[in-house]
Length: 71
Image 1 (tube, rainbow, N blue to C red):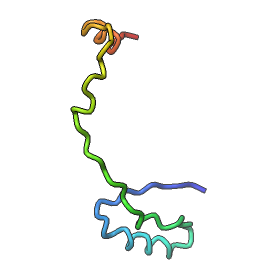
Image 2: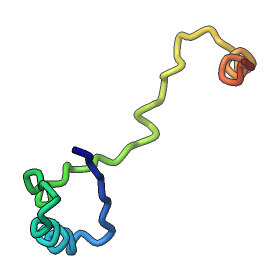
Image 3: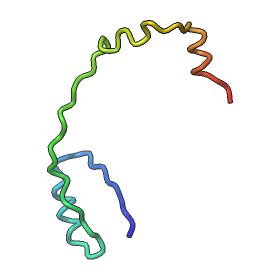
Image 4: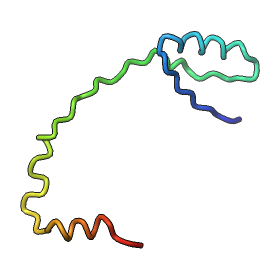
């Protein structure tokens, strides 16, 4: 059995697509996940990352060298 992931742009049309696919005899439909509750998206604050480099003894040049290491 093969699987296929479909992304639908218009969330209002998910039910229509789900019902249509159920009528095809060669398609096995999983549990309807179309009506799942969206998780609340917490906004990211740049200030929450403040101090991540505190107490680190690394220079900008060393950091760049590690980031752009040639293979």
